[in-house]
Length: 109
Length: 115
Image (cartoon, rainbow over all chains, first blue to last red; front, side, top):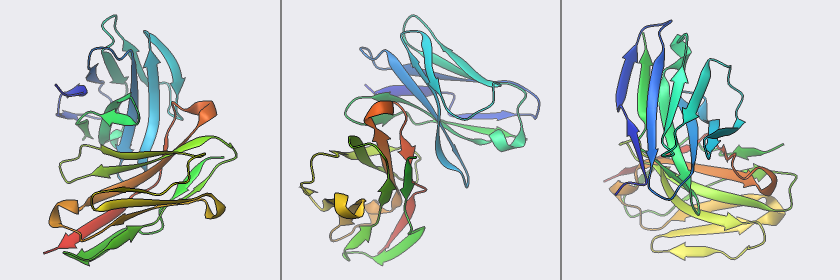
């Protein structure tokens, strides 16, 4: 069983729309971490959820938000999409190091 | 402030050559953790190793080896007898004990192994 499952694999949205990305950690993990990998910007920490609460966030505007459900799965929402939001969004759990999911590639057109 | 530098943007080697990927970090903490991750063309990031700041022993795992030197703030990664399957982007990363949840990644080094 994969440590982290993300859906969808690909997502195409129009500028101004909202995108919802999903992440399910393997059983036993209560924390999930979101990272953005945009071309030219590398991997950047987005959000950390633990026990249903947002514990930390990176340097991103408020239109990047999310939540964590009682089963510890998580959603990342990006509102008012901009072209530069096009990126690979990765969700991870933390064990000895991060275990990442396969990611959602968001394309904003 | 935390920072990770990977000066080599792209490296190409011929199969069976050895290759070393450089990583230099900056941190004010005395306790920190260093990581290497591999991102093959498929896109999924794969964890390779974690090193604690108080453990400077070098490590070898098969064809992979890591050289951690606190004196030069470096954590270099060597692949011996490279193979085509080693072609990937490799990321060095750092987290400090005071903010372990926030990992800072270097910009990555793209390695191409040519058959």
